[in-house]
Image 1: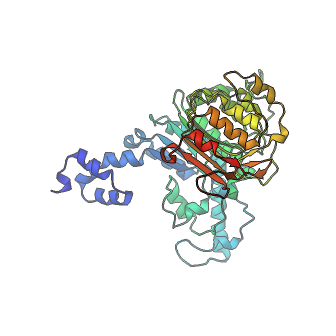
Image 2: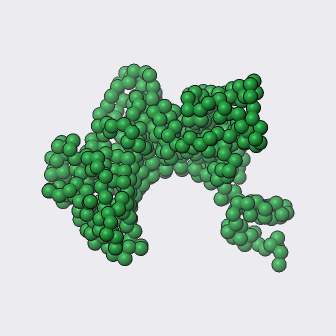
Image 3: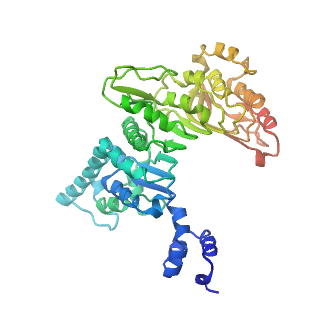
Length: 464
């Protein structure tokens, strides 16, 4: 029996098992199969869209937003915010890096090489001017209002040399074809450090602000991703008229993924005022207001089901005073099921206080490069003794052992992952894992495969 004679429902079921290249081949076989598999193809590949913040990327987005088959399916919209890490003055590269074509081994010299370098500078300038323009938000708004099912927005950070690598076939985005046609040369790899600079944190913050300004009223955004190996700064200086509208947009968040840079000043050179955590109201008479992401976490915490948070991606600079201690005083989770903490300094007391309201619901916890810095905290002790609902009391024992005892006595975790944890700031190795006699850097528990209860498993661990 020919596949073309099968019912559409069965054709769709079969197509659901095919890879993209296989599905494309089937769809090109004949017009009947093309039409029969159209919904399957659209459901799978139009659900999530990436676009680069360039003139071409935005124009491509505007074009597909006109297509009903696309706009009725889009649920996720991701922006690649920066071209070449937002700068046209990469001092790590020589002009020779722009000389070799990605399509041939021909090396350019002289005026041809300088012309190619000028194209690179033009692309970066286009990206920077677009993100800096408020018209970007206006055009983006007209696209996003057509995506009726949109519930997820985010930044997707990639180095442009990676995106241009002809061996890279996985990441596709609107604006990719024009980028490849204009930037026809191959870069040597440089790693991801350029994505974590202070300059990129400011650039990412501006890009995220443009997305928030473009969300239509009453569009229920459930998930916000502002990390993906890029960071933002903690304070946004926004027009006072937009302050409450942005907060209202974030009220429906159920999943929040944030990486806050520990460095950088507020996202504007305008005069701004400072508000302490827990008191983030605009000041009367001011034309601008500070949107503080720590305050945002406090505001949305009761509705959050998933929180992934990091405070920087590396420890190349001495850690600054961490506002998470203050955040722990105000945050109140009621539905949180997953919590992932990366690159953060806590004290034992603030970490426990931070987790206290999540005790009834928390099922998955990740701690990666979390440092306990108990030598700097005395202010939180009264808070712990004064909290209700059988709050946990810290006594004499190694800092991480105290934390694990709290996990054992107060949490009902189904999954726990700990890696590269440390204490003041010495690495903390973990003993008591299975049959291994050697301490390990990583410990993972999964209730489905562990064969023992979480309480028994965590009770075996000792810091080394």
